[in-house]
Image (cartoon, rainbow, N blue to C red):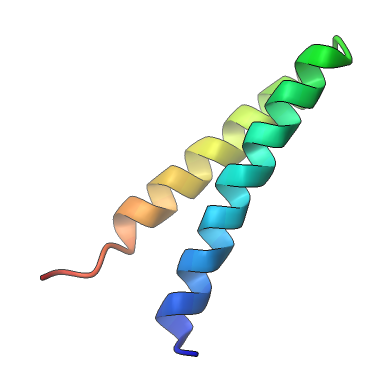
Length: 55
């Protein structure tokens, strides 16, 4: 697997983990966990956009 593909997979996992943390933080009534989840989602999306392979 190329390094490019590995980075894409890591950013996808960051988005999924961030979404999980956001939902879990809302269930647990923890604004800190929601903020960390939101930050993880934003970092994952920005990373995916930056690593977009030009066509």
